Length: 429
Ligand code: 4AD
Ligand code: MG
Image (tube, rainbow, N blue to C red; front, side, top):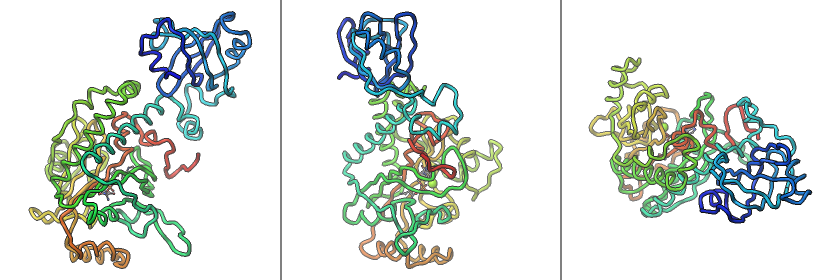
């Protein structure tokens, strides 16, 4: 069965073909039904003329409302007014499953669309987003594979909190308490002592109470960790990986990007190296722009927006003050108030998509930090062991897949970068 995109793109005019899909819109006038059919690749107009199909098929076409599933046979004919420039003149129109009156019409509230998410994900925009996301992930996996990384499968149920312990989801785990993973990082770190270069793609969970357009409670996290890699090389991996992902999205999904009103050329142009801006420089830049900013304050959505709004390429902000970041990062010998770390910010105001760092190898420093924060050392014993048996310089990072999708697809809200967004307010459907 040819896809709609194939029927429209090949020179099929005058040829007989079969398409199958769902009714996207339909109207009838006199003895003709004009039905637009969609499949995963696009939409195509079908005309069903009384007399040109068996009467039973014509009656079916009249009855088949939006979202009915159909198989249509007919002749491809040029028609300038039809989407894609061609239509299919039906000789047979079979309904596989009739649709009841579809509850989603043109202007719907965000809440209703979230309640009806299981139906709304059929929209052309959501379909395009899903395909772009898959192309980004495929580009990443290919890049990792080509560069000698091993994909690994860390646990999701865990006893450690690599990131902010206030955003942990607790679960009842038999007769104990456990947490849903915020990051696979510690497990990836343990795997580099044999596999050297590893990555994983897993869900990560953050009990973020704040409702923002860039936070999900459950998101897909692509993380990498590699032995013998210092902070600068870690950033080189990030810029190469991201470039490969973007270029693959352009190669596989330029139609989808256009449908989302994103110019594929914008992403094709993106190549390493990306600028590196010291946190201190970022503070100065923001002060000059009139932001209430001083050294030691975190960069939030507003500041990240100001730093990236006029950029075409992502930018690394490096060497953050220690107070702003977790204990596992390596102290920066050039300025021990800071870490050897980087956040990668997407351009056009989108902000942080990756957080990464070189890792601390000095157990004494990490223990002092954990004790100061009142953390139980028992929970971290295994992690601290990693520095005792053949420790090496190493680095890694985590990329928020939905953050990347939000930017690439030009979305206003991160919830549209995932089929079933999990937020403070919502676990249904
Ligand atoms: O910056 P984060 O917290 O870093 C880590 O978790 C490291 N342990 C990763 C590592 O080095 N292996 O999270 C990494 C990325 C962020 O840059 C952001 O893109 C994304 O994960 N992220 C979220 N995405 C959606 N919703 C949330 N609530 C997110 N929190 C983080
Ligand atoms: Mg971060």
